[in-house]
Image (cartoon, rainbow, N blue to C red; front, side):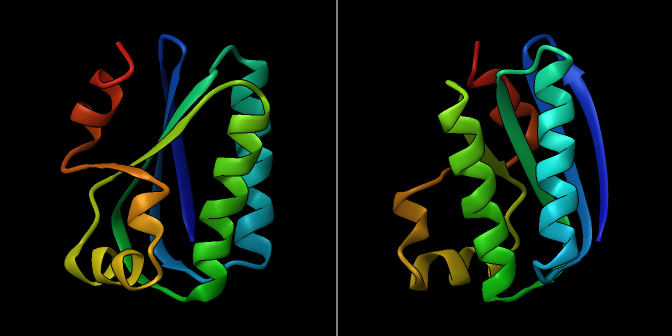
Amino acid sequence: MQIDSELHGDVALVRLAGDAMGGPDGAALLDRLHSLRADGASNVVVDLAGIRHMNSSGLGMLIGALTSVRNAGGDLRLAGLGSRIETLLSVTKLLDVFQTFETADRAVASFE
């Protein structure tokens, strides 16, 4: 999985691409979030538009990221959910846990 990020004030936009399968990818995402927090980002948007496939470990990776950001006093929101990932989040009841937005721009703007 590829992880790219950019700062928009105190909001970090993290774009994921490829397959979200947890494991080393989850550790890499948490490392990136810690780095972004050190750079001044208190809130995070994870853009999933580039994700092709996600398994239960990938969901665990997102939950771990949400927990980490919230424990640091911020919030994490999801954007760019494809129909497969939206269905996966719906079936697992995680749509009730995450705030989701159609686009990354809308998600970033929701923090203003």
